[in-house]
Amino acid sequence: MQRASLSLLPSGGAVATVTFAACALAALAAMAGAVRLSRRLRLRRLRRFAHGCCCGGAIALCVLVAYVAGSVAPAVAVTQEAGRVERSVKAAFLYKFLGYVEFAQADGDGAAPLVIGVQGADAFAAELARVTAGRSVGGRAVDVRALRDGDGLAGVNVLFVGRADGDSAALLRAAQREAILTVTEADNGMPSGSVINFVLVDERVRFEVSLAAAEKNRVKLSSRLLSVAYRVHKGAR
Image (spheres, rainbow, N blue to C red):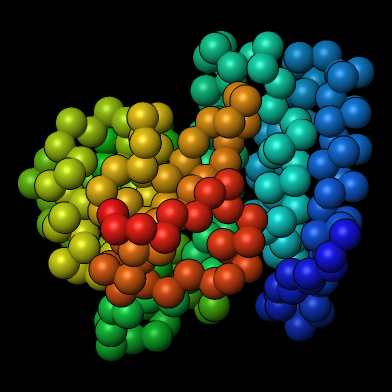
């Protein structure tokens, strides 16, 4: 197995390096353990992990992918509790994405908060605000805004469009003009204008990426992020 490392530099200065070989072993261990766990215990562990991946500071994104790939049990996919777990996992992913994206926006203040606008997903906005509370990325605080129809996108760095939004196409086009990282959760294919789209694969949260949309939106994605994506689209979007 080819070894490729993924390193993060936490604020304390220590470097944490996790190899993809270790990630594969972690995924196998998680899948083996999931067989023996009760439904309630699996959910508790996944909720704690989704919270811990934001609190640990030095936990690599590939570990999050490996854990999620082996831990979400199909038996709970249709329950209300599973919906809460899905939101927690997506919120943890989205927070980690911020460290692997370069934004083209010139806000004039390198210390200004990174703003995540959330449209059509109030429950997700609340969960994301909880996950990011007191956290920062590159010395910048994270501000979560629940958007309403007609709200402008000025100052927004990341736009999350939930399933409940009925006019996502127009919103994604507007975000493209503002050079915003767009994130969706469409089940029936990656929407035009979406840079990152969450998908459920065998009842597990994964994400796909459009390189063409990233280029149009003038956001640069780290190769480390691309390496753990479920699918990378290279054609026009």
